[in-house]
Image (cartoon, rainbow, N blue to C red; front, side, top):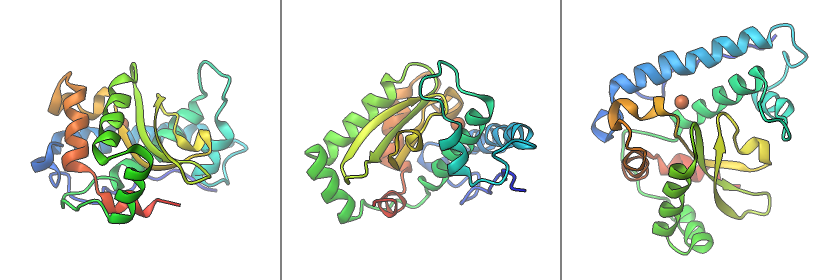
Length: 201
Ligand code: FE2
């Protein structure tokens, strides 16, 4: 039987502290919040019809497009997947945007700054908890989206290139209520653009 497992962060808890994400935030966010999704997800997964599936398939198969409220298994599985991606999409070494990604962004958004403005506006515009994303659809086109709670691009048959957690637990310690500042800092200092580029179709 498969079970969800909390992966270690791909860097030390204090590795991002010079880039606007403190050790305290990562201790709460990874060690407590992400772990809770894993633990609660495992309780709901045990004995269910989804027990032997890959995480992505559990997310896809438990998402209910018409539902006003998603199931507990969806919420915890999708948040588990979202946070695994989120940790990998950040890093302590500042790497420039690989030219393949930059060219695609310029082609689909007009400029890198236009993309960044859209991404921040999407994250600011997500009312309440959720995520904003840079996604690629099956035809290859990039766009910026936002999703509520744990919903993610898998639910919309899109590939997630970049995602930013805009739940308050992701920014309240370091940025208090200033979500726009958190998003700008995320794009300018935290994103590992090589990881983002590696996700392109
Ligand atoms: Fe989170």
